[in-house]
Image 1 (cartoon, rainbow, N blue to C red):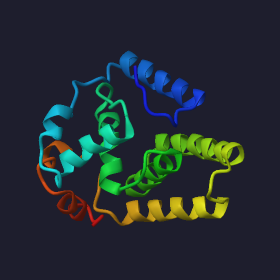
Image 2 (image 1 turned 30 degrees about the horizontal axis):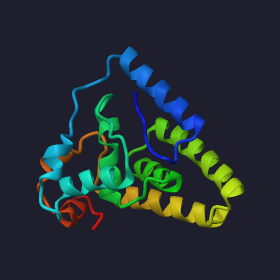
Image 3 (image 1 turned 180 degrees about the vertical axis):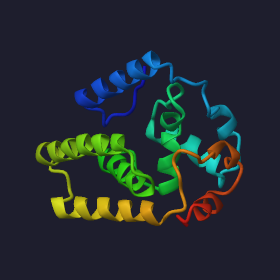
Image 4 (image 1 turned 60 degrees about the horizontal axis):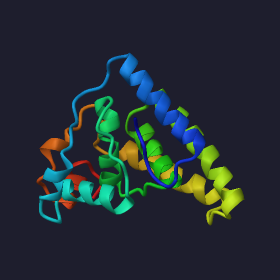
Length: 173
């Protein structure tokens, strides 16, 4: 089963459980792509080490089952520099929409926007609506301008390269 972080809400937990069930039912699970111990052993300035550090520093449970795109999700945070809080997750989805439209990103982004709105009301979240909109639009435009295809990128070929070099490769430097 998929688990994430302290930012999970009951709705996010239900969504992750549903996605896990759907992926198993459709037999879309593939073997784990990232070996965190291997990534942790890479030099500190590499893309792979930054991936492992993100997971460790945020206390994330990595996606080690499911389809390829799901398992590579944490790498998108490293590649783009977007946080793993709900707004950062929304920025990743907006970036992906810009890079290559997929309806699922619209659905996920809509759910994240509802979560952000609720958190703003309940926790006094620091950004107003216009600031959130501006950040998401910037992430979308960044995806449109990037040389990045989420369906074909192969981070396992890039783990040993510097994070700066990997970001530059995709026009995100």
